[in-house]
Length: 64
Image (cartoon, rainbow, N blue to C red; front, side):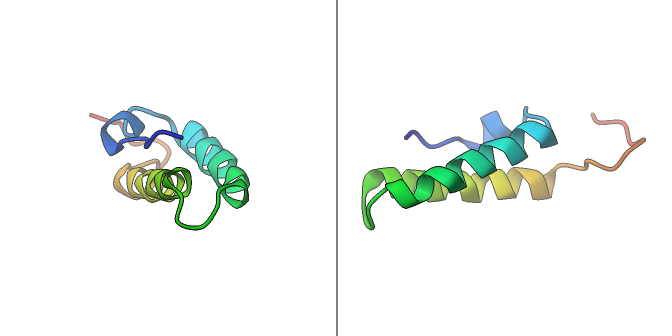
């Protein structure tokens, strides 16, 4: 699994980000402790949460 960067995630919608987080979280138990795949998955989840926190998804607010 490759790491999803904050830069690429910031271009995604909230629905896409939530779906990505769900899919990665579901795959997480398949990766062994300490593996590169698990590290990358956890890093991607952290980046998704960061992107969700930084974006303003409130209705009626224009994005710039």
